[in-house]
Length: 360
Image 1 (tube, rainbow, N blue to C red):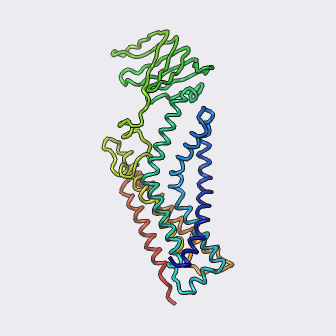
Image 2: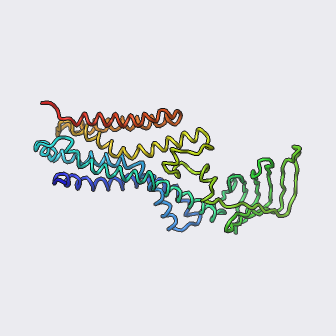
């Protein structure tokens, strides 16, 4: 590697890391605030920190392309102000060779983004969701809110009028929809929730159970003590893996080759997200490639150096805006997803054209 390339890379790395920490930290704080209520529910500080760390891959996946281009333009603008870019150009280096060190860094960032997209993001998000479910199960009583409908499981929702000490619940209404043909409503004066190793147990006292029989007649049964047992959600449950996972839990291959039993609407969204996972990491390189092509093309002027930054920002905003616009349209019509690849190809060709030496 040539001396000037090492010099530019050295000057680029510090603002890259600093900006990555600052921007990620700003967005990270918003996620931390969302998780802060968990501390009040009784989880330990170590578990809370672990959950917060699991959010990072998703944030980095989104932020890295912007961090890369901003730090690169900042570094090259500073080199221009110190006349170092002029020296490099006067020594016979083309704009592409001047941009080469930054493009090397951008390529490494793109590779890191692809690793996050393909492996780290689904793994971390799955662990995050699993840990949140486990916390909710282990501290189920803490998550119950008074005078609110609480969802205990996929098919059981209940209302609690008041929470008393030692986990006693007062004034319960339970909607039990586990049997589609026999949905029931239960009313209880009091109750409590017990957590066992493999299941929940909702104990109801002094209440009634109402349901419709096969003839459509409303039946009513009074009870002094009634227990409702529910299995805990298993992370390795095949049905959950196929149909109940969040979109960030899927690997790229699963997104692009979705299960046929999934609805067409969700299948389209999964495929679009799969293409997004393939395309977005490359923007760490393409935004830098295009941004430097525009920036270095402009003659440097100390009094109007903001012009270069403005034109560079405009070019970056246009390609980014087109990408997300086409992506949103693709969620409704999958055929438009190829427009995202065309957008990258057009930006690449335009950048190559700008890197061509000017005729004197």
